[in-house]
Length: 336
Image (cartoon, rainbow, N blue to C red; front, side, top):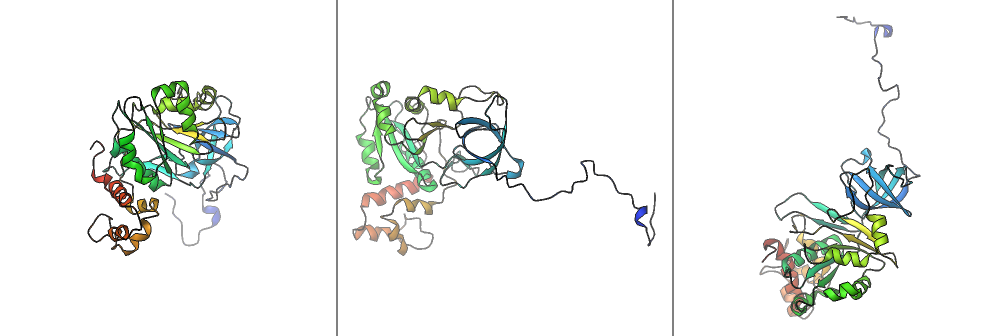
């Protein structure tokens, strides 16, 4: 073993060559000023299908983004092969700031937050009036997620030929939520699709609902076959075939440039990630009344100032009831 004294000469020091070359490492990342803008249509096992101008491009996330993941609806910047040709792969180098986020957890005790859709303008909550029976608690949970994430809710009721919508409309009347009522016959002849489309034009709308309510049937009626075929295919890179609603998929509407995001049927809609204090923002007629509330008020306790606010005539008592029902939905099971 060679030993050095106090007066070593530089020639005596042996430097180990850099196997990867002599270029020093740097923390400065490229800015990619020439990156193209695109929108994420669907995500499948690390591969992201994106729309760049009029081309469907397969991409992967750049390592420099770290743990930050892109989801359906994200506006992204891409570099690499943007031709959209078979077996080509681009790279996502930036993810734009989100204007809204639809999130959920598997249940209320699950700390893992699932981000479903980004940048959607509204959330269409699809529920059948019968076969299967409506699940108001699930609707409540979807409403809370919409209010928390910055999405406007839209209630779409199907199968009105089996049961009337009156009871459900009465339950949500105080919330002033836009709604559309459809029947099986109207879905078949296209009348239902036309009425729903009138609520969607020019907007990005995420569709959510549990299995059997007719959500995918409605989406298929809204989006022409040629558009579903163009954006719904999956490149051979992923080894997947046609979309079967196993992951969220953005589909373009014909006409005024709206988008429909079809999401998988949900069995539960956990709200572990929701901060109840943000839900009050969706009630502008009640929010000023919270100024007299005690700190960390749940808005459902004896000292809540909202009772006096409503009693003074500033808001409808039905609105306060609806707010409290939504805020308490985490303590109730969805099937109640």
